[in-house]
Image (cartoon, rainbow, N blue to C red; front, side, top):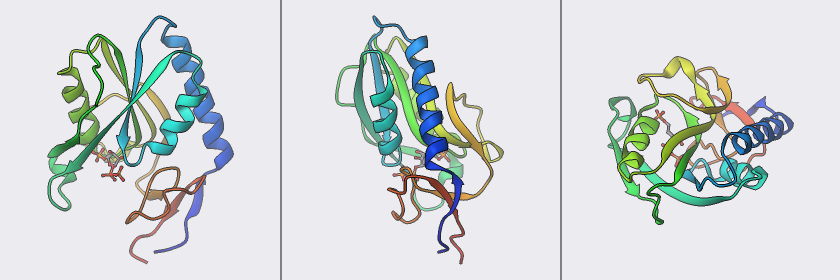
Amino acid sequence: MSLPVVLISEEEIQQRVAALAERISDEYGDDDELVLVGVLKGSFIFLADLARKLTIPRTIEFIAVSSYGSGSKSTGAVRLVMDVRGNIEDKHVLIVEDIVDTGHTLKYLIGMLESHRPASVKTCALVRKAERAEVDVSVDYLGFDIGDEWVVGYGLDYAEQNRTLPYIGVVKPTD
Ligand code: PRP
């Protein structure tokens, strides 16, 4: 695998996360019960930074999903591995993802979380590969649109490597 080439710098990420946090804080009220639902594993760094920059009350939950079999993402078959632990009924849910690729995972999660009867479900993702979209799913709070490249860092991995880079970089897995 090649060394990551910087695509989005640490400074750019931090500025964008701060702007997203400001928008989210403005759009949800102090009286809303906002639950951030991080999707493991990739969202853990984005969620940690975003959550600490919000200026409104918020609680944290995690959820874990996995795709059926290998290379099956484009089939849209997503399996729930770990559900939220707390009760989200009548609360405002914000799903926090590191990346939206085909969109199948996010679409599945919206439907799954809506079955818990929350007050609302919205979505937040740091990056999206718009040209890879296979399903129509809206990202209410988006960090960056990127091309169809393999990205690592800031939670994103290639074969579990490079999740803790402070920037987002491009790698060529076939090298
Ligand atoms: C990534 C990402 C999303 C999903 C998006 O997770 O965190 O959950 O893929 O892909 P999709 O839009 O095509 O459904 P991944 O399977 O890499 O697991 P990880 O977060 O544990 O690294």
